[in-house]
Each structure stands twice: as C-alpha cells, then as structure tokens.
Image (cartoon, rainbow, N blue to C red; front, side, top):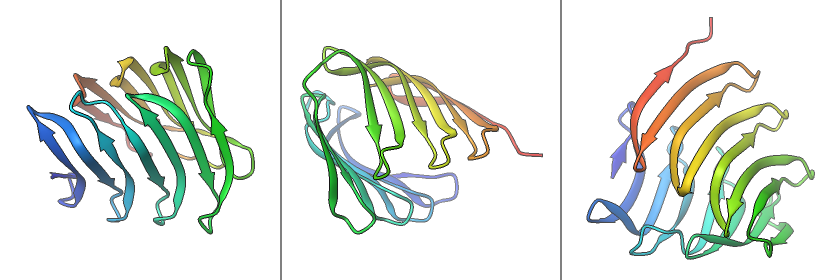
Length: 171
C-alpha cells in the first residue's frame, strides 16, 4: 500500500522483488478508485484494466496481452459501452476518444508497446499531461497542467519510481 502526501491510500498492489506482480489499484485523492488491473510476473499489463473518472464512474476498459493493447471500450456516464476500438496496428499513434468523439489521450507505440509521447486532455480540450515512455512502461518525465492550460508540475521517474517532483503554484 502506498499513501499520498495527504495520508490517503494512493495505490494497492502486490509486489514481487519490488515490482508489480498481480492486481494493482490506484485511487484519487477523494478516495475513489482511479484504475485497476493485473500485472504479470514480468511487471507487464495483462488482461483487462479499468479506468474511472473522479466520481467513480467507469470510463474506459483496456485489454492488454503481455503489455500490448488489444481493445479499448469507452463507457458513457451510465456505464454503457458506447465505443469499442480493436487495435490491430502495433506501431504509430493510438488515439483514445470519449463519448462525444473528443480525443482524450494519444499514445506513441512501437511493436504494440507504449513508447515515446503520451498526451492526455481535459474535457475542455486543454492538455492534462504530457509524458514520455521509454521501453513500453517507464515514464521518464511527466508534465502536468491545470484545466486552464497553466503549468502545474513536473514529475521525473527512474525505473518506474518517482525521483523528483517540482510543483508550481497558481498565482
């Protein structure tokens, strides 16, 4: 179990040799579930991962096989599937759309694994965060933004662990 700086549960996961192995759940600061899924013994996504909004509503279900995205279901606010994307091309950008067909994320991919830039968006179209993936899973740098487009913070990861966080206050 890991905790946020505010003392709330941020994530629950099973570890093997300090790496995720088994089910993982992460939570928003309001205590509601953010996402959950299963990692195999190689620390790779396998099976269905579920992604929720800040009100606890299921928004996306992504099916992985050994870290490769096979399918993405998009859900409406009532929990009904409104769009299914079957992923057949392993290279290039993978775009994720919401119920209104508005792009909410874009991932670079090579051989089916996330590699390169990842960009996610707020409902108003502003960039939420920009990340860079190295070898499929390790996020090296993540830049986060407020809904109005102003810079929020910079996170630096090494081997999947947060090493540095620079926060910027609105003022």
